[in-house]
Image (tube, rainbow, N blue to C red; front, top):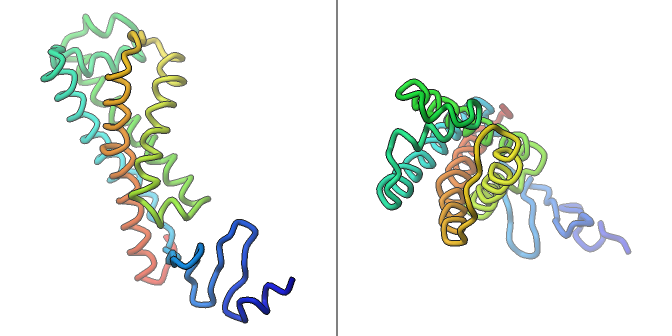
Length: 196
């Protein structure tokens, strides 16, 4: 079959079902997906990590502290326990502050992985409201079922309601802001006519 004949000189049908048009837009079916520039690594990692860290931190303070009644100091000490084990809970303000530092470092790592993935799969940038929350759920699952079990932290009992609430929190407060920040950075790069 002559694909060039089907779409003329404006586009080529890819095996994936996407069509790249001569104007730089990519389509799937009838809906166009614009080709964005490459997002800035520093913006995506710094601002995305900061936004995810603040969002997830506020979620932890409200959900665990206010709703479940966990003492505020223990919330970020539990993050430090990934490095220090149970002794983190006896460390007072020092391990609380260490937990906050580690929390933001992890958020920056999560933003870094999104940046690298979006460099490989630009569709992540084109649909941040869809792929951001999906990425947030993936980040939650990897953290809770790969990273935490490999750390010195103790993993608590499984509660389906907590699991669903935490997963939704990561979708909306971790994955979504990172994806939106990367998307806006890529839009700026496209408008500037450069790839950062």
